[in-house]
Length: 350
Image (cartoon, rainbow, N blue to C red):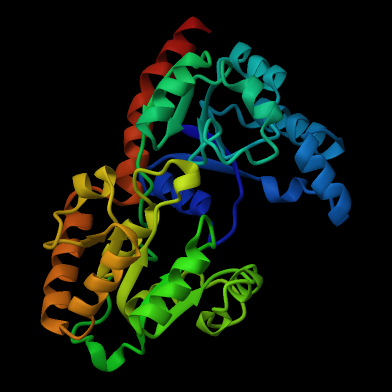
């Protein structure tokens, strides 16, 4: 298919990984980078994002329609696009173009982030919505969505892969490691994990971690001066004896993409227990789970110095990730299979 893909496109964003997967599947993908539609002035950028109104919103919608007219795609794929207007989606439909919204954030959840004003209006206009939560499937249908598919966030095989043969604790200089964002109570949890558990805890992520950890007395946990991306991110997993993975409770997560990335990198996964994680990994065989700080400390103590057990579980988790389709190619294929009849129907009507 010919796909016009609008999203935040950089070499380290998951939208780019999905584009790579679509191209590996043989589709022709044209890119529209939503990062090009941000106000340069920081204050105006905040105002435009909160109000979802302004010249860049209008320009993005004009450019989508112009590119659709010129490129004649079968599908316009909007990856976490908040600036799309209902009138733009209506126009694309009249042109016989199928539209899909890929949204892993939770518009319906309790976090109440700003910037959703236009998105809420567009829900009935997309031909297909992709969400990663069972609860959101019902939410979208109740909000008037035409069609909804539950998908799974995934690992990117060109980035997330196992270390060289023979890799061992000799190369691992991180004991208990977390690479990610300071959502929910993670700064406090990780600080207590270090203090009460006595572990050497390494934290990487954006600079927002510094003030978050300072507030709870854990600034010493922070490593580096920014986010770890692509090769650096993978190598941090390789160099860690224990890799933590948290659910974002404020997003009502069932599972998180980090768990699939860690296992695909051959890392030992210690993940927050959930029905979604338990359905995808056999506990204590392919991954280890915890509920709350006390159990996390217990599990970390049990496995930190037991390299054979960690190696066995990490290898089984790696095999599960590869064999069970936790990769971008498989997950993108599920969406395409849902889109194909919609494209045929739309083209037949045209």
